Length: 305
Image (tube, rainbow, N blue to C red; front, side, top):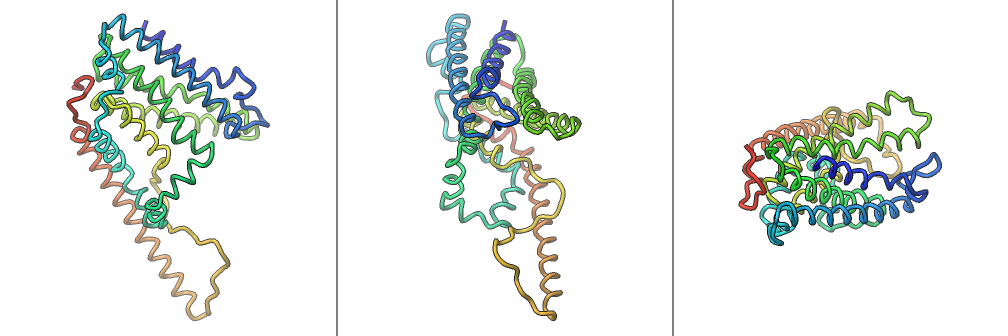
């Protein structure tokens, strides 16, 4: 029965994208068009609300959960600030290298302090979808609703961590159809590889988010982690790291100083690259060491062996 409910919830989330002309992509209408984004946000909001009502009914009738217990299982209450801060810090450790690249090497730390990045990002519908509507609706559905339904079954919490993210990954496979439709000249093989990579990293993130959700009982914590990962993107694992190139005309140098300037830039680039990859590895090691420590909480939904 739980599998039927989960499949129904997933279909309710994805199918409306293709049932309405306002949300259905085409060679002439991108999924990034503002009208498509607005319509899709309306549809997923309705579908998640409907799925929430069904889940609350199941928890109340089949699990005999009280209101407080129901809110706890959904990860809505109590909202622990400590769990949010620790989970966000844990996620940031994994992106120590990319944070160093964007903030220090590319000099964006001033923009972060002034809040310019947040304002510029959320001023577009693409940013609103990627960093607000998407993370909120996906975490409510795939963590807050699906995880409690599975915890009520004989499945162990460890199996719930492994199983439920597969629905999350499968729910993103429809991007393959959208990509092929809107990029008709792209060969099929690269399109399949692109979708396979997306399925893999969304599933991996789903494992992490489900682990954090069960360990902290906090849907806000995993939603912020989701938003952060969407913003950060996949960390680079090869190539040279270089500062942003200022927009403007070329710098005119004399013949006698051109070589030395280029040599300094090349040495500086290698230093930035070395620092980036050291931080990337160090952050990954710190993430592994702190995974259990920073997700420990008295509000845990279950004990993961």
